[in-house]
Image 1: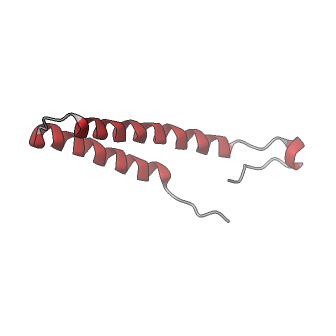
Image 2: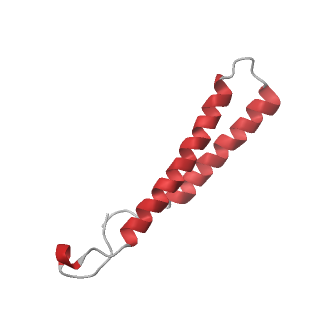
Length: 78
């Protein structure tokens, strides 16, 4: 049996931490080099992509498997 995890919560926390890091970089550090800002923006973007990916995956796993594949109607297992 696969281990159940709270993927959406984990990704949301990580994305929020990148947003906080972006605020700190912009308001406190104010770097002359823009790379730290873009690293934070990339972290936020990848977090948002991760949320969309996980939600689509979870919705797909909740769909019933066609009867031709298993002979029964049950949710897919990862």
